[in-house]
Image (tube, rainbow, N blue to C red; front, side, top):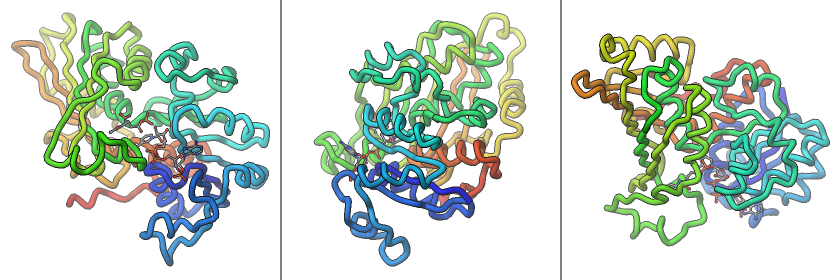
Length: 349
Ligand SMILES: NC(=O)C1=CN([C@@H]2O[C@H](COP(=O)(O)OP(=O)(O)OC[C@H]3O[C@@H](n4cnc5c(N)ncnc54)[C@H](OP(=O)(O)O)[C@@H]3O)[C@@H](O)[C@H]2O)C=CC1
Ligand SMILES: CC(=O)N[C@@H](CCC(=O)OP(=O)(O)O)C(=O)O
């Protein structure tokens, strides 16, 4: 049994994480912490917890005093707020899983440029591991700080990893057209995400300037050992949760003569053959198939006349894109079954 604390437990990502941890048989939740609801119960903030999970939310200052009692600290805070907390947790020999972006980019200068926040302790960033279990399992086992990937990057990187690793596609341009449910924007509604703006609407945002672009590029470059030109456009769907990414790639000249759709599926099935949470499907992925689960569903189509490959990748942004993926990494680090506490499937409707 391990003891964990969650800071930012009242956000959309944090409350989903608490839900998962509360159902995990090797985890005891030592504390949950909130910024504006400290002193209240979780059930006062989210009524679905009333009667069944009546734990008190404590302040960040109180939480820090309990660092000596925990093995793991989860941080689900707005960007830029995790670094100081992580420093204090490390001083107490606590493992940290950050759901935010503070440690996702290897190069602090790139982080500073895209997030407009300075790394005060760059050495923490240098030692953090990008927590995408399907690609970094061995490193996760030995790390102290896990940078849990962004939700859009999770869908884009898992969707393309087999093609990039096998150098099947050109680096010239990879177009990622992603659509997300509104919970991706967090619980503090801004004008762009209120009901009347989103309902019966569909819109692009952050065009050519979304902060997930360098994160996607960083991991795609590593996989392909090349310098990829990433074009990433997010869109807002009028649904609560789920991400579907449509990714456009062009086959490399060396593969053009021999590649078939069947061969692409062989490559994907081989690459993900031991992965519990990846479902390679001949159907086209749908958000309904993955919603409320830690599964990433991937389907591919290939046009041999044009050399175009289209990958469709779907995840739940709050689970595989956040809390579920963090728990998957925690399971790996502590030697639990990787799917422990995460075996639930989508309920479809
Ligand atoms: N939503 C998603 O789909 C995903 C989110 N993430 C990441 O998880 C993190 C949280 O996101 P999300 O849950 O969506 O955001 P929310 O806005 O829903 O929640 C933010 C959380 O941080 C707390 N908080 C806000 N401001 C401060 C502050 N100044 N100091 C301390 N705590 C503060 C809030 O506390 P309180 O409510 O008590 O004020 C709340 O618990 C972000 O880094 C986000 O990028 C990652 C992947 C997916
Ligand atoms: C729909 C929506 O607004 N999505 C958020 C991304 C989700 C998120 O929380 O960002 P991280 O994955 O970096 O933590 C956005 O575009 O800013």
